[in-house]
Amino acid sequence: MSGKLKEVRERISSVNKTQQITKAMKMVAAARLRKAQQAIQQMRPYADKQQQMLVNILSNLEGDIDTKFGEVREISKACIVVITSNRGLCGAFNTNVIKAARTIIEEKYAKAFEEGNLTVLPIGKKSYDFFRKNYADKVRINNDYVLLFNDLSFDQVAKVSNLLMQQFEAENFDAIEVAYGHFRNVVTQTPVVEQFLPVSKIVSEDGATKAKADYLFEPDKVSLLAYLIPSILQTQFYKYVLDTQASEHGARMTAMDNATTNAEELIKELKVTYNKARQEAITKEISEIVGGAAALVDA
Image (tube, rainbow, N blue to C red; front, top):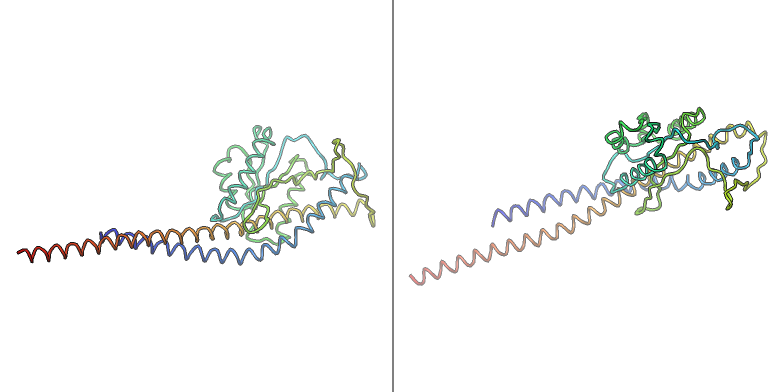
């Protein structure tokens, strides 16, 4: 019985230590989340309005200027950017983003995938590790920006979006999509796959492209759009990364909170088990003492 008590005590001690770790990780995630949440909440309205403006502009060009960013081509070569975290312990967050990426690779871009003309650009160690282990012989993997989360300055992130725009303009890719985590709130992060290039056009109910807004360009349309379109796309891509960062911290905070709660419940159960075992040991000892005393009296 003493062996069983010792085992239960050791388990209680082990779970207590684990609970302390999960509490600390929850606090760290909460601190990082506040900063990341503020960043994405400030960025998102600006990025969304810019994206809306870009869609309107490209829907209104009608061949006035030469830009390839809205050019829809037959898809023979595609690129999927998969943005996940560098670390785990954030529930199913990374798994869900990777699953969304796999779905679009194997369904929407099945032809390019089967022909070996699909490139995956992973941002974050989790996505890189997954595709390196499972798709290394099936897709091209660009691992130049795996550690992008080590420096999330706008200029650093813009290097990725600039590369993608250059590759699309050079027709090395006919379509570029981004799989990332969309941050809704602390407990809800949704895996999303969005088309980065070509920029979608506004489509009417009958399927025809139609204009939604008219813009006046100063000083002139060509020089202004040559700067404006890449700038908007850089901002949009930066939003994807900030969204994923906030989603990661929210998912980790929720996961560590659940782990802490589960540890508390387990400790309660172990204490009940320990008390029962201890009571059984005491009862057995009392029975042995009473039995021994009775034997002496009979003697």
